[in-house]
Amino acid sequence: MRSMLLVRALFGVGFIAFGVVVFLRLVVFAPQAGLRIVPGIVLALAMVALGIHRIVLVLRLRSA
Amino acid sequence: MDARVTPQARTPELRRAVTPWGSFSWGYSDVGADIFIGLGLVLAAAAGASNVAFLFAGIVYVCIGLAYTELAAAYPFAGGGPYFVLRGLGDVFGFIAGWAVLLDFTIDITLFAWSCVDYSGQLLPVLVGSVHPWVHFTVVLGLIVALCVLNVVGVRESTAFNGIVSALDVASETCILCFGFLFAFQPELLIHNMTASWPSPYHLMLGTSLAIISFVGLESISQAAQETYRPASVIPRTSVALILTILIFALAYSNLALGMQPWHPIVGNHGQHLQFWQIFPSSADNQGKAVALLAAQVPYWGAIAALYVPVLGAILLLISSNSWVFGSSRIAYSMSRADLLPSVFQRVHPRFRTPAVSIFAFCGLAALTLAFAALPALFPGAMAFYARVFHGESGLDFLADLYAFGAATSYSFVFIALIALRLTDPHSPRKFKIPLNIPVRFRGEKATIPLLGIVGFVGIFSILIFTLMTHPIGRIAGPSWLLLGVILYFVYRRHRGLPYLRSQKHDWRRHQMEILRTSGDLELLDEYTANLKAAENRTGDGSHA
Image 1: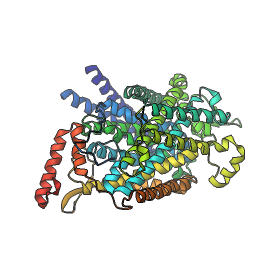
Image 2 (image 1 turned 45 degrees about the vertical axis):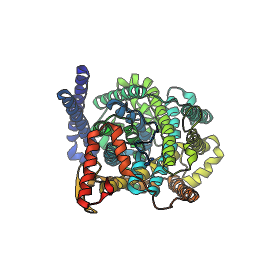
Image 3 (image 1 turned 90 degrees about the horizontal axis):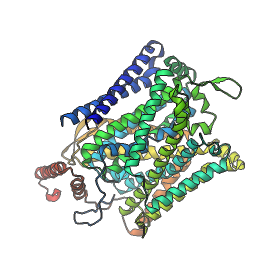
Image 4 (image 1 turned 60 degrees about the horizontal axis):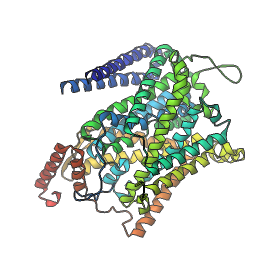
């Protein structure tokens, strides 16, 4: 159970890190690309949101 | 959808044994398979704006997902969208929503079996549709017949098997996307492709209406609700993860497809180098196996992915096709129990105890749609007729047309039902509520209107309009299917002496108490009873009890 929670938390951290990388890679092109990077930015934010969702769930399960 | 359930009724109940992971994997095996079909179709239609098409459809999908989550947690009963519409809008609209879902499920049986063969064709060239159309047709037909027999006999994939395949697929797709974004993704290429290959408004609308098919299958959230223990707690948790996972995969694949430098150079017919997305517009074969082609072009991981992704994709699509056979027969069965369809659909096989008539009816219909879709490839003489009447759409396009129409229609009704139920049934406890609500008073009771429900309705309704404008077959066959259904409905209601437009009397309060009691969420049952009592005291009306 404990190791499963750890894997899930790592999964969450991985998604957040991945989202941040995608965000940073796209955002540097913002001046020339304008709104064209919006789908990519939404993708990055969704990754961060999923990561946070996983971590919050793990923390809630640990405290339960 | 039978609201005449009473605590005394001795009908067997579904066992509540689905865990949070089981609930997730149940949904994932239905919705997760969609991207395997949708990606190629959208890249072919929307070209450089494919990611924008997925973004628009994805935003609508998030609203749909939240609506289903709220409704499935509040009404954990295995009827899906048609059940919510029946409760919120009455018999006629419940029937129309159910009939649209039945169209979708029937088309899905064919579409997913078709794509399953397309993915298998990546490893077995004899199954490539454009080269061996008769073999392709025969194998797809064989799969439909096999699924029909399996469902009549009563064999269904287990939740455990779904869970393993879903876990493998999530891990696989995550690896493909990680390697793709780390080693092949070039933002400047993405921006270049979006600028140089931006489609016409017509093609953008076409792409958006096709993108919604990558997000269909949320019915399974509510189908699983009746078999999930304490659904009000479990469903919101797993649904949010499911919604985000599917959204991420759809957006990631489309951004990667437009912005990736292929691992191996892709050479066109005239020796010119092609971008990855450019292999889709001219080839229906490629459209049917887009994820396998993309996976093979991802550096390093692609060497392994080229071998296993077609197999994994084919298995996931076959599971999905099977769940549509199961789903269509159960929806027809429950609509029949609610007097929305003739009682023949309730007829259960005497030996196997499965709704055999429903299964045969919808698998037969699926085989008919397969014949219609495959006709131009099988008989080149029919191609001229299709080209003249249907703008030369391929078999896959034909199936996608109807799929998009059915999905957009049924989801539109679900949004209206969500708003209607918020107003007419404010007493049912909603452990999960869509955020952003406008407080109102309705018939003297406090209620709320979900702003995201309105946004979602506008979004899905515009996709329905896009579908009617851009799908030559969808705009003829879709409304014809609905019209046929409405005529049959009126004939049946007349035959049974039931009201045409008015609803029958349903005891929703007793029904709600029963489903809350069986769900294990007893504190919600207490809350519901207290809400009814408070309303009764306010109005002095004893009818709430």
